[in-house]
Length: 267
Image (cartoon, rainbow, N blue to C red; front, side):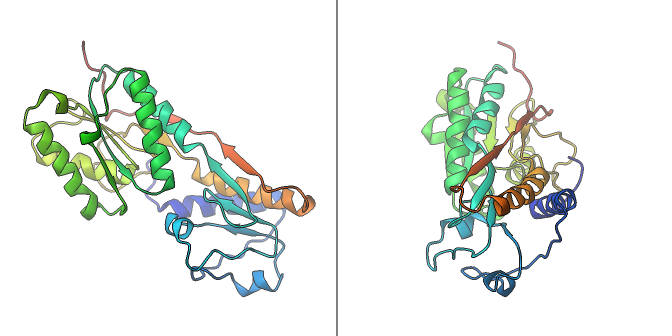
C-alpha cells in the first residue's frame, strides 16, 4: 500500500526475489497470445513462469499451447502447468464476513463476469448473507470489461436506485471486484453529494494503491502479488526435480485489510 504500480510489476519483483533465492537467472519475454517464446520451444531454458491475463484464460481460440519445459502459471490454469494462486472465493467470503459484522443491512456489488470475478462475487455474497446482510439481485451488476469508463455507469445506475427511495434498495455498502473500480466509485459517489464512508461504505480487492481517491484507506483484501511471483520460481525449481509428479495447485494466504472506507453503523 502507498506504492503506485501495475500488478504485474509486483509479480516481477517477486520473481526476481525468488530467482535470487533459488540461484536462477530470469529472462522476461512478451509474446503473442497462443505462442511461446522460441527459447522455450527450443528447450533453451530450464523452466517457464506464465503470467496470464483473464483474457488469456477464457479465450479458447487458439488454445493455449503446452510448454515443453517445467512450467508454473500464476493465478490461472495453463495446459500441463502447476498453478500458484489464492482462494478467491474464500478470501472474498472473509471480506464479506468482516463487512457483515459492521451493522449494515443492505449491500450492492459490482463484479466481473470471468471466473475469478464470479468466485469473488460468490464469496462476498456468502459472507454478507452469513452475517444477515442482504445483497439483492437488483443491486448486483456484473460486467465483462474492467475499464472505469464502462463500469462507472453501472455505479450510477445503482446510485439512482438508491436515490429513488425504495426501502429494499437503500444500500449503505458497496463491494467491488478490485480496488481500481472501488476507488473510481468513491469519486462517483462523492460527485453525487454522498460521503464515504458515512453514507456509503466502499470495499475492494487487491490492496493496490491507485491515483484516485487517495485520501481514503480502502477496506480490501490483500492479494500477495509479490509473493505469488517468488513462490512461482520456487515451484518451478521444485518441478525440475519432480518431473513426474502430477500437476499441482498451491494456494497462498490472503488477509482482510481494515481501512477507513467502511465504518460500523449504529443499530
